[in-house]
Length: 180
Image (cartoon, rainbow, N blue to C red; front, side, top):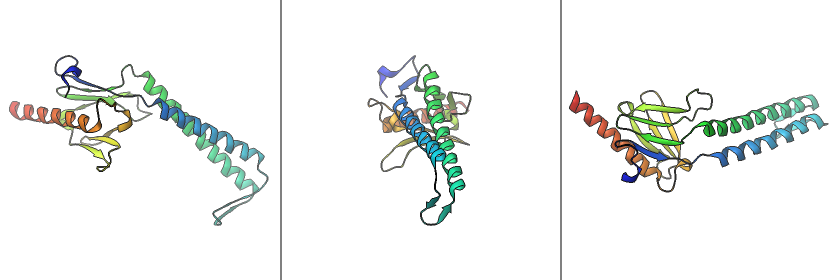
């Protein structure tokens, strides 16, 4: 842990990088896909053969293209919704206190933009996949919370964040055993 990062005594604040670039690029990609597929559904004058197995006539191909256009539009909307949710957070960070950890929620439809977990409830902190970590996973009693490595800054690599969380969990467990 870096002493300069202590914000208010026992609270450790780990800043995160907002994933605007990925979300907006994905939203733009799916917007283009939706536009191309919607145009294809309107201008289609042929059937469609998928991998020589599925044969669709003219009307079936129109429905297929329209369904893909709707799905692409929904993915576009989710990308922009995710960017808006992350923009609504005043501070995008992991806040590691003596008894709790607060981190951004990965669920786009959940009302809470941040999730607070008691350190006593954490069962495991792991990197997935172990060989080349891409995600920091914090496992709680009944759910898992993830922090993608691309959210972490160069100053706080994933292994160091995991080590800080594990140290706080161990301190909380030791305090709980000593107190009760």
